[in-house]
Image 1 (spheres, one colour):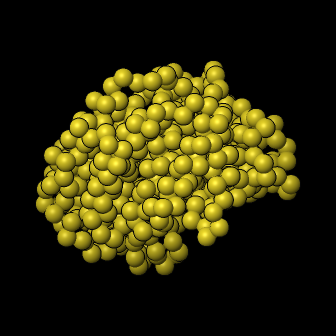
Image 2 (tube, one colour; image 1 turned 135 degrees about the vertical axis):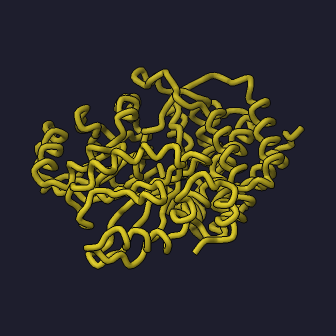
Image 3 (tube, one colour; image 1 turned 90 degrees about the horizontal axis):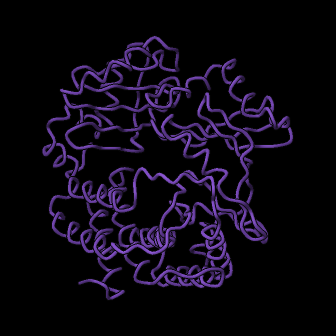
Length: 429
């Protein structure tokens, strides 16, 4: 059933024929059930949306059938882009739990891909065939005999972006990642750009395959920093150490880190503003004014350093006296304030959503900054605040992307939080 905000969105974008069906999980389940005569589709749950107004909309689902739960994703196009349905027709005869690798909902100009078939991650299909899967794993583990013949367990999958799984051998485990062709060279270089120190731990790369666009990492044990955020017992030391570890990462030369940046923070902010305006037209003037102020104030950039690019609590593990920083896929050259602010923006998002308190968020941020300042040079508070506001705007479309209840109100709340960050720091014009 569509929310009123979804209905308004569909009315504003009649060009994408299947948009209404894709945003309505019940309607999609019915359409899929009709298109699959040999399978009974009982329900569908949307887990992720990627939407380009007037062009296409991708929705990932967990589909419940009489044969079990199956990952499926669909992409609805505008009628003039219906030619892009051609690829999915080529995987129709491929085997899957639903008897087809993909299919077209022609009246909706919509393609549907059934796990493990993916328009961009074409090597993903190799993992469903035991013989092909063995070839891929053997290539990745050629220098890690303990992982030869490992069992692969699915962990995370983002259609047309990335697959993550766990390899378990008799005495060792590894983290398996499969990428789009266009992303592979960057992430491979970023994976080896940093090194561990006494405090900072970087997960080592164990294997790579340019043929399959796959990387294999050591499986890293530890306690997620996320578990320490809202504990009743306040432990500032872990956040100070996290700040120190981040400063150590920023201080490295990162000689192999690619210098070409496909999308800088200002481009990402502009894209976020466009998404917010599409979702909430009444916020157009408000978010455009915010973005203009942020980009103007950040026009004079400080020193550019190697940065993580997506740094927040989920990317940190605590293991004894070491801080492990995970997932360097987005590592690039940028402003150190960007990483600190991204961490803060994720915290403030949690507070806005009712998952933590403002008082504790301030304590965490101050401890993080204090640790960073002990190991390096803390960027100016103004720079961090500007990047934090930008980070909240980048996060603002996510309630819609992840199909949260009352997503419209949640988007509004995150935009308001971005404004409050700048007002609190007294840097609004």
